Length: 170
Image: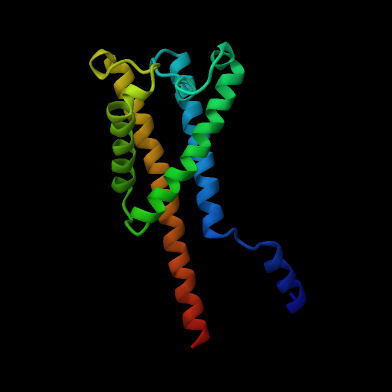
């Protein structure tokens, strides 16, 4: 391969920036895992619908239809970007799947126990059924693992790339 074709190939295959990766990870994680939560709700594994995010702020019956569901998934995706940045700031250098799982469970406790009064669609904790608690807890755990593993893996890759660049320049 000629030097020019190698240069052209590396220009086309530039990796996205770390910040962009966090945004994409957060957005995808929020939309994907809330969609799985939507499926869990439809199959009666949980009583919590993703539309619960709209209830404190949106007025009207539209929020109970398909439009409300789509907007809810999008809002959860946007909130998830912030959650991904929080993980990046606090925990990115910790390389364990258990850190991500614990992060997800902390989010679960925060939403179901601390923020519960804000969301009228979520029953009081003493009235929530066991299936809802277990399903929702597992979804948050998996969400935390997804966010944590993705960000920690990328951080490790960035560190290795910096080492290679540093060794190549000396």
